[in-house]
Length: 107
View 1: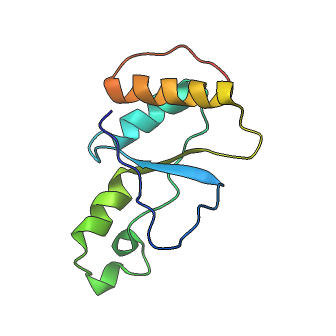
View 2: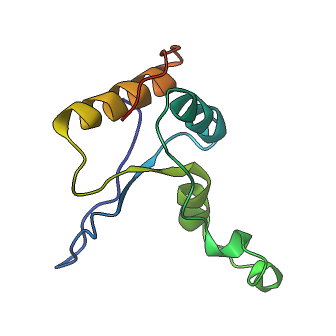
């Protein structure tokens, strides 16, 4: 699929509270809407700092941060997330990214 995931850096560890993916920024909102329509609680948790009101006046030039901020969305991730539920999330992401309609299922 045309998605990216953040790379692990150094000795960093995953917090396992959500799973962020990056999609085409021009398609992110439509993909997110389709994932949500399939009954998956996906959302946008991270935005580029230069887009936040606190930093807008600073006019920071950080194109990579901007691209990731505009294309990142968060998928559910929690300790009791079953393999079946993971498969439902994956199917919803695949359908949304590929532009297919998926009937609502619960994860």
